[in-house]
Picture 1 (spheres, rainbow, N blue to C red):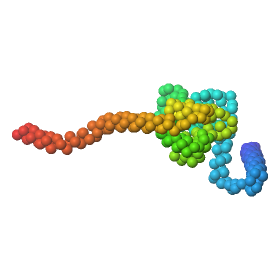
Picture 2: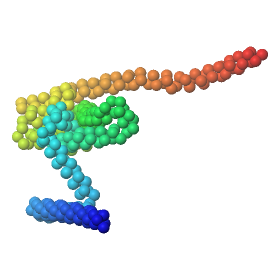
Picture 3: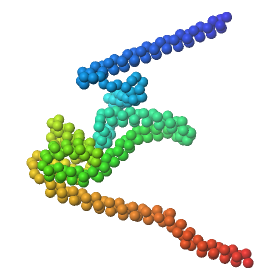
Amino acid sequence: MMAMDAGTLLMWGAAACALAGCLLLGLWAGASWRQRQQERRLARAVGERLHGAPPAAAPAGHPRQTVEQIKSRAGNLGARWLQGRFGGSLLGEDDRQLINNAGFEDVETARRYFVLGRVGLSVALIALFSLVPLTRRLNDMLPFLTVFLGFALGWMLPKWWLMRRAAQRRVQMSAELPLFVDLLRLLQGVGLSMDQTLYTIERDFKDVLPVMGSELTIAVEQYARGRTREQSLERIAHHFGNEDLSVICRLIVQVDQHGGAMQEPLHRFGVRLREQRRLELKEKVGKLTVKMTGVMVLTLLPALLIITAGSGFLALFRGLSRVAGG
């Protein structure tokens, strides 16, 4: 009877705990729903005040809204880590420079996602390496090996991706430079001012000059906010490590400050860029020829030997076999 009473009491205690948990979960869900409703009403009121019509919002539970909420929460989490005690160690000065050179429109959001990616990848790879049998056996021989591998790869993978993206932008900028010089010369030749020239290139030629167009957008906005021409072009002149691009930026600053004709200097500069590009292509073709020679030796030479000398070797082997048999 005592055992029955203890079992019944334990069952009722578990039921009470489950009921309390469901009640707390319902209260939390209700508070979250009310907060979301309040945010929607506030956004609708702001939209009506600004545009005279309520904004077209996605319905509740819509996949797009769910993705936006996840991205917003992830960005807020990265911002808290960035502003926390170890924010300086999670995002160093070289990492900030890489993010600036990677060409993101919103640099602050990119920094938050970078920090979140570093921490998340480190934790995920440590957990993954702890479950892989090979790394588990290695961890038995070398303690904390999985922790070291997971943390090192998770810490460096976002930085390697940023370095690759920045390198691709530098290559793309070098490829766009001759066309940019020709457009400068053409627009200056028809009588446009420097402001009109840069604005026209940034607005109308952004599809053919994607990297230069995005950088010119930032430069034009900075100049419109009150910065000097030299300060607005400093990002383009120094962040890509291209001496020809720095020369063009200095020429633009000089013409903007002191005036003068740009057609002849830009024409000579464009000719020099094309000649340099031609020499670089010749160098690449020469290197490719040397590489293809090795590939042809490894792949075509055995087949050529089989076709040309195969019948002779077969006749030789048959003759030797007859001699040995006789």
